[in-house]
Length: 143
Image 1 (tube, one colour):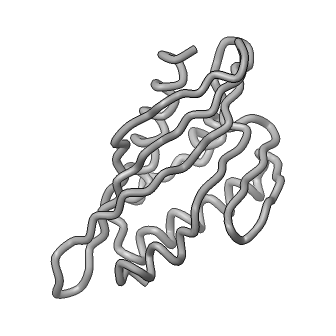
Image 2: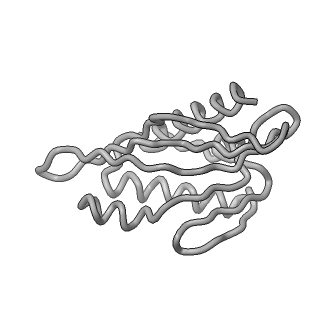
């Protein structure tokens, strides 16, 4: 399971950076997620489906990241907490780099905890727990 989950997040990192470059493939994004999922952040908990609306919202999200100057997202570390033979929590430490007008780039470290399930031998994200992204971006002068 560990090797498969690490490869999943390598794909996710690669997809994210291609999307920041304007090369968005929403079908590729959809392939990383289970058919239904949950997300939790300080704003609350939401459930959703891996459908056309999800793809549209994610495309808008990547457009927003580009608009605020996100240059790159890199994984610093992936640590797994296995729940059983089919489920784990992937604790992913990210490093984000942002361009700012007339100032040096800003690098921000943050963590997201992804719920992952093995489906037909392939890992899929079915949920995530994240911190307050907006507060972190404000703290670092990004927004």
